[in-house]
Image 1: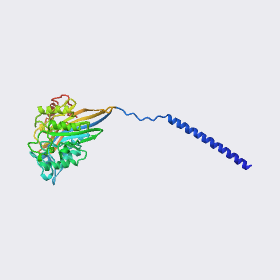
Image 2: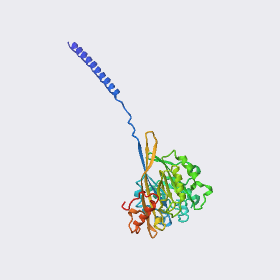
Image 3: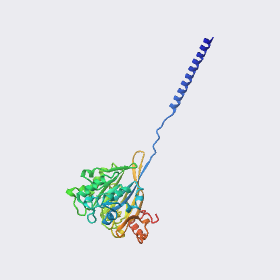
Image 4: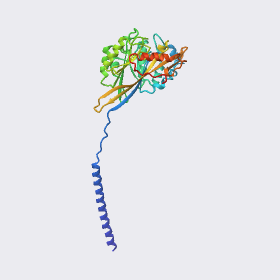
Length: 384
């Protein structure tokens, strides 16, 4: 009897197992059918795609004896940080920041010097880079002031600054014609730079790449080499007449020529005073940003500007792209000093009559100069 009962139980167990397996098989088949009905779609990309770079620009770092003397710590060491207290927080807000290193960083072995043959300490470059400046013009009428030794020191110094794009001074002709392209926020950009004067100084052994001088043909060839590889072309022009508040006929001609070549922004330096800003077609032209810092005499030479603009890139579904410039703004700045010391670069909106007596009148004067060719150019008000 026990054997019979055991066999019956085994039969029921076998039947149950078969039934379970059949049920599981049905579930699996059902799941497979359900999964087969699910269509997995790749998320569709949304167009247009928009990217942005914020850019701020300023003028000449003109480092006279009293400027580097004010920064001297002793033992041939310098710190310019205190001179930039008011400016540093502004610059740090931007993706890109341009300035003109007017006076060459030629090496302390050659001795620090001022007008007419300048040589500035490495620490001015350190200070500017630490603030956030990463676009630097190296060609000016003072680039050759300390000869080949000074130029080689300058080039070696700037080569070590990671993430900084320099233009206008190169180690060789091959170096000069090799496009320097950087990318940020999916926007590729380049900086080209030219000077129209070397103060009569000759390039050592005909090495014209040490301080690149302007010619229509040269700039055309340089732009042709790079234009299909970048989204944005910036051109730094060291040009014009010193201490003139208006652009010369030659400046205007070159500006139109650069616009025709497809340049997005022309950044003007050298006159040491402010000149107007305007658009020529789609090209933003800043004829002169004035001095960023100097020990020159007179409010006109101590007043410069910070010009900011957003570079916007729009990419369509067919992968064509378009660059536009938006949110242009200009802020007046002033180099304050007393008794040739205590140098500070201060925005006009932070001035009082203690730093610059009657500063409101000067604000109006320089605002009118900037707007001379385009009265719609926005300028930061004294109220901020």
